[in-house]
Image (cartoon, rainbow, N blue to C red; front, side, top):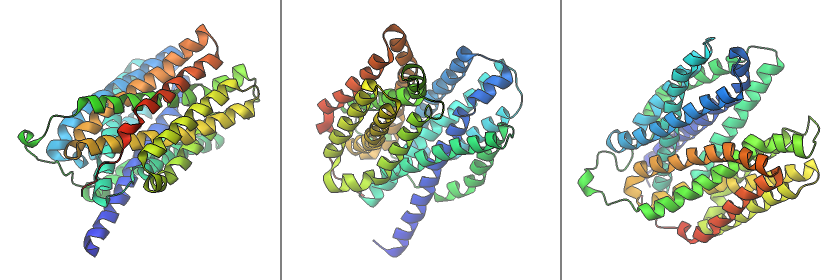
Length: 386
C-alpha cells in the first residue's frame, strides 16, 4: 500500500476515533446531568423517564433516516449534523426551560444521537474494511473512555460547586470545534452513490439474529448501568462509598475489553471471542446475583463488563461482512435493537425485581446472554475485501 494511502487512512482513523469519542462524551454528559435537570425543573422520576423515552424514540427515527441518507451522500453527511444537533440541544438545555419545553429539545438531541450512533458505526466499519483487520473494538473503546471522562467532568463540576450546566457548554464547544476536522477527515463509504439496482436483497434472517444479540447485550448493559447501584444499596446494604463502584467496575472492564479486543480477535477469531465473552458475562451476572457481600457483586459486575464489552462491536463487524456493500443500511437497522435493549433492560428489570427480588432480576439477563451461544457460529469470519 503506498505511503500516501497509509497516511490518509491513518488520518481518517483518527477522525473516526474522534467521532466515537464525541458520541460517548456528549451522551454521558446528558445522562449524568439528569439529576440536575430534575432538580432545576422540579420534575419527578416519571417525568424523567418520559424525557429519556423521547430521546430514544427520536434516536430510533434518526438512525433510520441516517440509513436512507448515508448510501446516497455518505455517512460523513450524517455525522456532521449529528454533532451539530447534539451541540444545539446541549446549549438549549443550559436555559432554564419549563418541563414541557424540554421535549422538543430532547427530540433534537435524540435525532442527533440517532444520526451519531448510525454514523460512527458506518464509519468504523468502512475504515476497518479498508485496513482489512479488526479495528472496531478500539473505536468503541474511544466511545467508552470518553463516556467515563464525561462522568468525571460532571463529578469535577459538582466538586467545585459550579453550575451543572457548564458540562453542557463544555461538550457543545468541543463538538462544534471538531466539526471542521470531521468534514474533511471522515471516510467515503464504498456504497455511496451506488444504484439501488446493483444491490442484493439484505439477508434479513441473519441480520435479525445479530440484532437480537445486540438487544440482549443492551438489556444486560441496561441492568448494570441503571440498577447496579440500587441493588448494592437496597439488597446488599453497601456503604455509600461502595454503591457507585458496581457501575464504575463495569465500565472500567468494558473499556479494558475493548482496548484489547481487536488483538484477541486477530489471534483466536471472532467465534472463540464471542463464546468466551458470553460465558464471562453470564458468570458475572450469576456471581452478582448470588452475592451475599457487596464486594462480590462489584467483582461480578466487572466480569460482566469484560464479557459484554466486546460483543456489540464484534456483532456489527460480523453483520457488516454479510453484505459489505450495504453496511450503512445494516448499521442503521441494527441500531434499532440497541434502543429496544436499553428500554427493556432499564424498565423491565425493575418490574421483575418488584415482582420477585433483585437476585432473580439479575438472573434473567444472564439466561438471555447465555442464549447467544446458540448462534455463535454465525460470527465466523468472512473475507474483509478492501
